[in-house]
Length: 92
Image 1: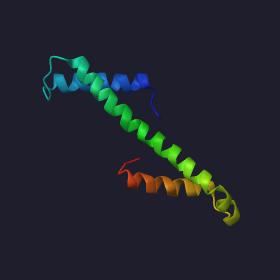
Image 2: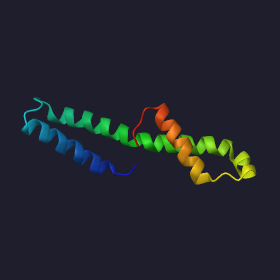
Image 3: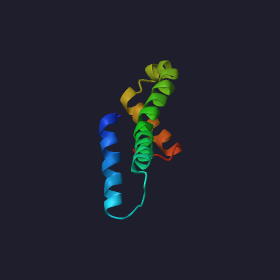
Image 4: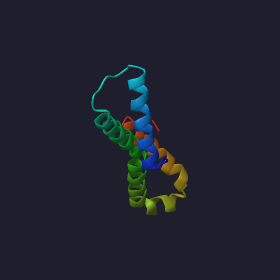
């Protein structure tokens, strides 16, 4: 993940505070809203990590074929990652 969990927590707190101050949301339980925003942000940010891990597993299975055909690992990683992002409807 490109951000630390502490920074994601900061983003969640700041976002909720901004939404409340701008009167875009109303809540008596700001901490609960912050926790939900934090969990949503964390899940989205970890999606790329999960996709990268899945790409590694896929390419490991085809490692021998790639070596025989002379395929570039970084190029294949990028192509497989794009396909998985499309499959999961993720924007990376």
